[in-house]
Image (cartoon, rainbow, N blue to C red; front, side):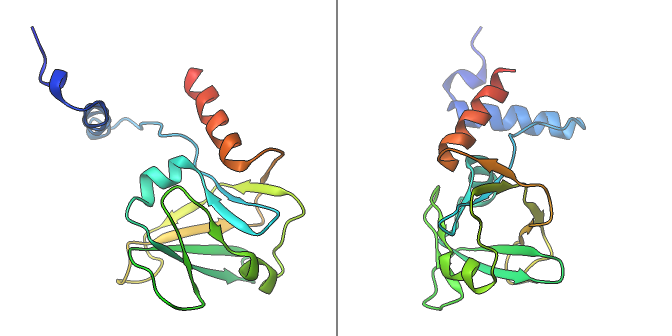
Length: 159
């Protein structure tokens, strides 16, 4: 007997299964979320962050709070011709060299951090944004960040 899922795209089937499990109170593991700050000043969200939060993102607004030593990244659904808005292409990086230099948060190494999504960032104008606490122990990445992220995700999925 054929199930209704036989003709559905695999992504839709998995989304429905995950939704069903969540409705039953289960926590579905989606992968580890990272935002990497590369030594050249680029900020790179990994594929898990992109898939869960950045599908419609065309630009990012960046902010820094010196008191809490955290970076705020606010996804925007359109581009703006402003110095405080950085272009973003799905799956790409945010060229934040001037941002990290301005706030003296440059890194000598590529380091990835676990971001925290906060629905309250940006008020009613946006759906929220990320907080990246630079005081947390970031993970030094010795290879290309996107390669390291996908390798980590694949090895964890196999466990």
